[in-house]
Length: 297
Image 1 (cartoon, rainbow, N blue to C red):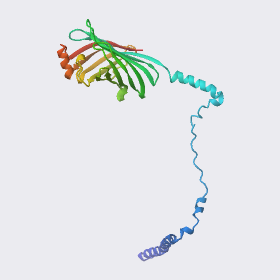
Image 2: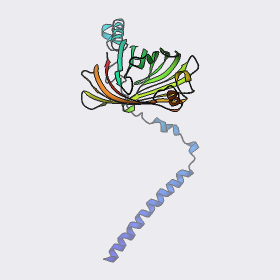
Image 3: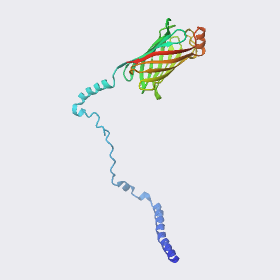
Image 4: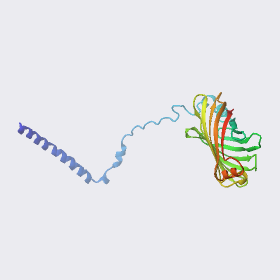
């Protein structure tokens, strides 16, 4: 039996060796061939392969302005302009009283307003803002109004520039540059730098967030920080961080456009501003218990 298996293996090896040798020899011969004498152009004479069909640019929505073929280009141009005016270039007016509140605190109770609004389209707007505060029975402590050109520079974000006019105290006029909009996670941010006609450089950063507790109850944490590049003794402002405000308000939306609220806000004057406040006989740290209303239309 073993003799038969050995004989079969020997026969197979002698049969494959010439084939392997032939293939190797042919490869050597091919390398030795003079390729310069060969007509390689015939290699390009292969029959053309059918090219893959490119998808139609209009597919699947159909050709652009297909209605022109039915109604005529001139007639459709007027319709398209009317559609753009009604849905893409509307001029809107919006006004919001973000904070209009009564403030209970040590000493005289006070009040505060913070309103803003705009008129314009999706890209360009005229934006206005006003805020101020005071104590009942005393002159208004601070009041200002801003007139700004606002241009959308990104989804949910506007670049704003214009003028701010102080209405109380040693009045000043400021050039304003700022941004306003929604950052990720729906934080609303309003930041601006101010350069006064006296050369004073200041800045303000506000941030707030609406946390909806129910369909009608909204909890809103809010922070504001004011900065100055130099001391402004006549305004009681010190270089660095002028003051810091942290607030928490809970509002009830009777309708989305009208929502009364209650809350608490803590204010601190810091650095040289704290020293200015103490010199003027003011408390550099004030706690306000607030009740107010937020509205828009």
